[in-house]
Image (cartoon, rainbow, N blue to C red; front, side, top):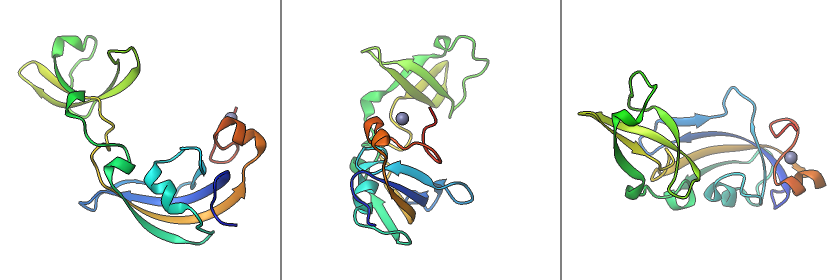
Length: 161
Ligand code: ZN
């Protein structure tokens, strides 16, 4: 069986940036299981997996536009540290949940703290980053009709509900 839309695919992967630093990896853990063709994973990786079979190994380089998007400067803003009530000390790397101008929940990351001002960045932490995936396909199966209805995988490695 080859990877096509509506296949449930298990992969082991290691993700590194261009500096060779490991960002994420399934090594030593359960494989990532996803429903192919349902936008469960980033487009650049999903496209590269089409027609692959169990045992195939591939290296995929994904540009930001096919990954987590470009880094948008408008999503970075400076706010006074008084905004962070109840937080003992705001530090670089902390993540907070906020609301966008349109009321959507967004995650923001603190990127700078200086002179009573805090810089927060609402871009995805991997926005603007070129992603290098080392991938091994470990399992492929047909999705159930229920999984297709839901647009995600059930059971091992998937949703339990
Ligand atoms: Zn479901």
